Image (cartoon, rainbow, N blue to C red; front, top):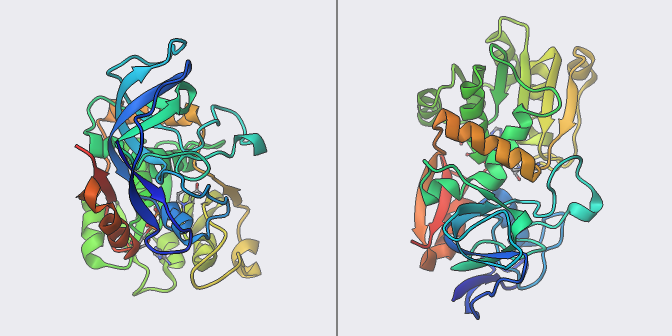
Length: 338
Ligand SMILES: NC(=O)c1ccc[n+]([C@@H]2O[C@H](COP(=O)([O-])OP(=O)(O)OC[C@H]3O[C@@H](n4cnc5c(N)ncnc54)[C@H](OP(=O)(O)O)[C@@H]3O)[C@@H](O)[C@H]2O)c1
């Protein structure tokens, strides 16, 4: 079978196609015929050698992928041949708080999904919603679960509340779709009027152009009648935190996904911005398997379909990386093995 392997960390594009023996399921393993895999920002960091968790040299890249179970070990009870599954980002994190011994990630410390076949312990996988195509199902594990946990964390969003999303990256688009499905009002920011129209078509109630309006936090607050957003999905950390704090309501939540910015290296919040609120800053790191399964039930119930920008064939995975790295996508970039 064919598989990509991380070649030289730090050498773009850093993945190379190899021939490998077909995986054989051990007693508790499943073999998946991978049908599609998708890219996340972390895959670019891993390739560049800047991801905080060092990748295993020669690992099969990509946490996100979906496929059909084609073989099961004799002790497997969770799956049967023919099941449609995806791997969980933190393979060993099943539920409860994240702990140091649960940090293994697919496509980083463990072989991931950019291969024709993947070998996973049965505990590392979940069933994907039946109504999704393979390319749609392949987008769920990282961006989808992250957005879900931003909205459904210890203090979940309830209908009628206001959620603020930043930009039109993969996490923000899922957050917008989930927030609307939950009955929330959504304020979305973007740098592009064209993307603004697409955000509205996805359900955004208000769109603020952050490039045209550097004080977009105030504009977002004004769009709530001055009360502020109940929850901010903070996807850009140091670069945007000041405005996010200006946008959030008195007892709101800011779900902080990154601590290292492009323009600014550290999280800095002025005392005017933080002093004016009692909001909670909460970190999110993707999520556990139970949250992935809960999200899939909601996706199935709502008939929700992830937004896909472009699908590349398996042979063009390196082009897919390059396309995704330009950072202009509206929707997920997927690699198909079908
Ligand atoms: N902690 C976690 O669990 C976790 C999980 C997943 C992702 N992340 C991190 O979250 C970030 C977002 O990831 P992603 O995959 O959703 O998106 P992404 O691919 O990084 O998003 C690209 C989009 O971000 C928008 N953008 C860029 N700079 C911006 C800024 N200063 N203010 C507002 N929007 C800006 C742009 O939207 P417009 O074109 O609309 O302007 C751009 O199209 C990444 O840094 C990623 O590493 C963290």
